[in-house]
Length: 165
View (cartoon, rainbow, N blue to C red):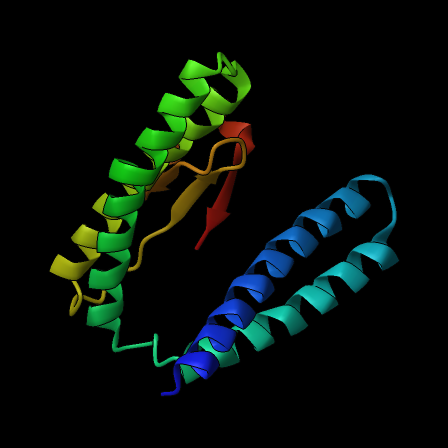
């Protein structure tokens, strides 16, 4: 693959991924403000951005078989938790920014949970076990099969968890 095309596709993937997340957050805000049609517009365009990013990712041949995708996801989560967030935490501590420090520390802790879930899934790839997950809307902590009374990362109450069946 030509390096210029590869670089452009990586930029498309990155840009579309950012747009997808931003638009999903905007849609939630519009819903909270009682603007369902605007929320719908944000969700529709977010889906379109997802399609653009997905096409670029496929072109880059970043999508492998599920076993390899689990392995790559595990490695990515481990790297992010152990390297990137540690540096972010150090910077926030040096700058005495407690709000950023809280976000970085909680995100690091949650990334470690993600890595654990990926590792467990790799060990049970062939099993037909159906699991319900619960995700904390405050910090992103993922609970595997059990709705906790309180989030172990940010202490949010169980009404702040979203169920994924």
